[in-house]
Image (tube, rainbow, N blue to C red; front, side, top):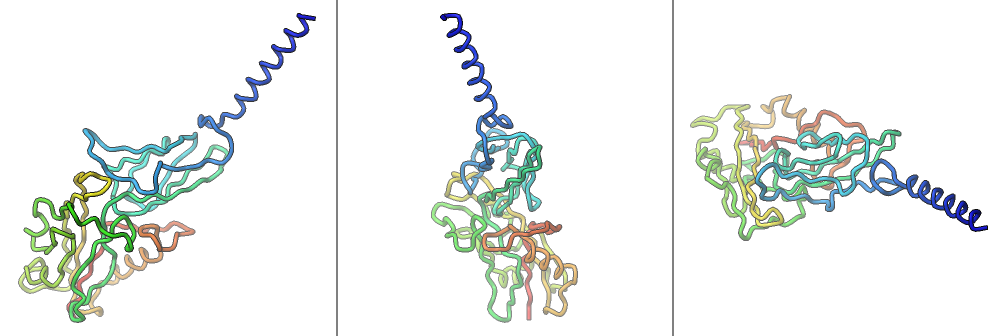
Length: 262
């Protein structure tokens, strides 16, 4: 009888072990749907001796990808390298399992950007306002933050307010960014270095902005009109925008700040 009981206990133990083993899937230690997340929907660049990298809360076998361009993600582990990514935008992260199951999530890489739009100086539309954390409704952390750290943008003629990051476009033109006599389709790339007093703990961040100059809407280059159309139809760049059903080649950076004189 004791031998029968021992055999029974052994069978029960083996069956339990096999049952527990079957619950482990793709190295996650859990069964069921994949909860793809990075611990928060907003990821902050932080001080680091090397590149600052954030990993998924749970990793699974398969392939990771992201949209739009600008985010540095490891296709095997899902790790996001914030140091080498373009911040201030919202991205869609996709995981494709070996069996073809697709899981998605969205993350914002904290920072600022500027909307892609036309600014009409003759209509007193002269200030470009930064958007924080990919949401035009999110208040910018002004107190303690620094914009145009080092003065590089202002020294070029681009009038960036160091207390709030706003670009005075009329003054920028007067400062001679586009020369003494601006010409149509002139474009300048300006890098703005900034430190935000938020979850990033004032870690140095950067944004490259492309400023264009035109005398009127009639003189705007066709390729620029197409770029704006692609971005406005396309993306996940800012909250509130439609999500693409079919991804197209809409690159969110650099943001296009287009000055129309008349």
